[in-house]
Figure: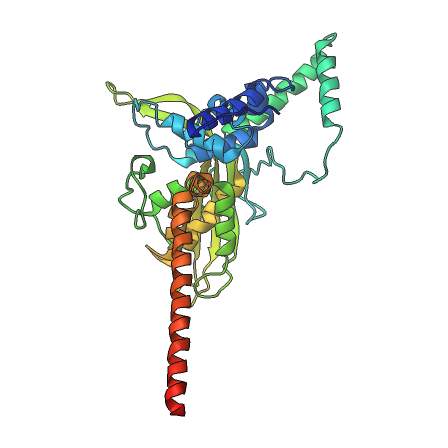
Length: 391
C-alpha cells in the first residue's frame, strides 16, 4: 500500500481519492470484466439495481466494481447516476399477471392452479463451501475451447424437445392465482381500491407518513434488503401481542414487459423486459378486532431476483396495515429502511466534528466549575450555620 504525504484538508482528500483509484485500477489481480459480475454474481447485481432504483445491469456492474463490492456504495453510485438522466417518457403500469415466469412456487397448497416451477434457487443447495468449483469451471472452459464434439441427431432432438417444453412452461399464463382461489371462496379481506390510483413516484419528492399504500410499497421495493428483513423480524409480534404468522401464497421470479404508450397511435410499445420477484403473503386473522373468518394478504414486488426482500416486503405490507395508517411502523418503514439515508447519516460521523465536540467539552468544564462552586458555597454555608449554632 502506498502513502501520500499531504498538507491541508483539500490535499489530504485528493490524496485519499488517489489511493482508492490507484488500488482499484492498478491492483495486481486481473481486471474484473463486467460480464463476470452480471453473469456470475447475478444476485449481487440484482440487489444493487433494486436498491439503486435503476434497471441497468451493466451500470450496476460498473458501480459494484467502482465501489469494490460495497453494496450500499454501489447503490449510491447508481442512484446518483440515475438522477443525472433525462426523463424521456412515463412507463405504463403493467399487470403482474403478465409476468413471464422463470420460477413459481406456492408453499400454501400441494395441488395448485397452474404449474409449480422450482427454477433457479439456492433453497435446496447444501450450505457447504465448494472448494473445487473454480478448478471444474477452468477445466470445462479448456474443454470447450478444444475439439468441438457435434451432438448426435438423437441428442439434438431431445434438446429441442426440452427447449420447447421449457418455453411452453414459461410462456403459459396461469389460469388462477392462489389468491383468486381464496377470493372465489370469500376467504380474503378485500383491500383493493376501486379507483385504482396511479402508483406514487417516490423519486420526485421526499416521502412522509401518510403517503398511502403504493408509496409505502415503493419505498420498500427500493429499501436496503437487510434493513427490511430486520424490521420484519422485529414486528412478527403484532401490537395486539399475537404472533402473526404468515404463509406464502405465491413466490414468483420472471420477466415483466416494459411498456410505453405511443404518442401518435395511443397503442402499447414494448421496449424490453425487466426481471422481478413477486410475493403474496397470507396471514391468518385471529385478533380480537379482526375478521377471523378471512385471511389478509400482503404484497411484495422488487426488481431482480431477491426473494428474501420480496417476502419481507409482503409481510411488512400486512403489518403496516395492521398497525394503522400513520403508525410507528409505517414511519419506521419510510424513514429508516433506505440504505443510502441510513449509511449517509452513519458515514458523516467520520467527517470533522471538532467544533461541535469542543463546545461539548467546554459545556462539561463549565458544569464542573459550576458544581465545584456550588460545593464550596455549600460547605461555607454549613460552616456558618455550625458556628452560629455553637454561639
